[in-house]
Length: 294
View 1 (cartoon, rainbow, N blue to C red):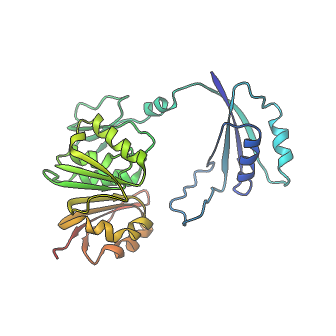
View 2: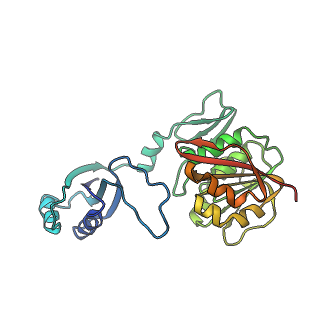
View 3: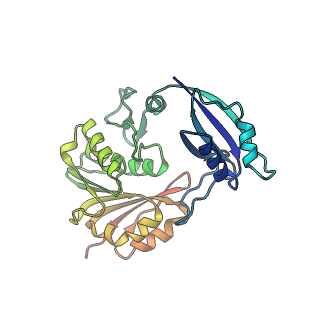
């Protein structure tokens, strides 16, 4: 079975209107994506910013008549703003598998590799994490996750206990366990993330070493290493809770921070922690710190 998609290139002012028009035309799903490679990093709360050029894409069944789509859309647009429409045919595919074909093995530090089950690990790989991305965020390809994995790959984690605060797919907690950590706890607000973490831990045969908890109810026992790869605003607002999870002389890793937000995040933690130099990758930062003795 094939599908059709109507792709409209427009500006942010008209994007919501085109979304409504595609819905009225019977689109099964509608997505908005960046049409000009313009990143939006961390928008203010209660805002939904769009890019300077937006691609509004409607998915339709193969038999849906789109021959009059241009005329129907033109009637709904009452201004002279430029926009274009392209109708494309899509073959039926298992899109997750197509994506995985391009998720090639990634190396971190001293021969630690993240691989999908669609690929073979290099012969030189000392430690391999098998990971098939799902609904929860985290594959190692994003700079924030990559920075955390690089840090972990250079640490002696043997017999240490780990907390992954905002665990997503569980990649950081699982990586720590594969590198020698004793036990790990994953904490997240999203049930899908907790499920993905257990699934990925099982795939790597370390599920007996990891426990997951909802962010509303988790153990408050301080541990050796706490990793929080979220965003600057929650890192700041949750600083008291996160700091309390680190043992004296324990290590704290904070990521998901833009390089322009480093000082702001540090200020929320500096009363109890001594920070190392920030690690930067593609305008994103990772902060490592040690908790002072009380």
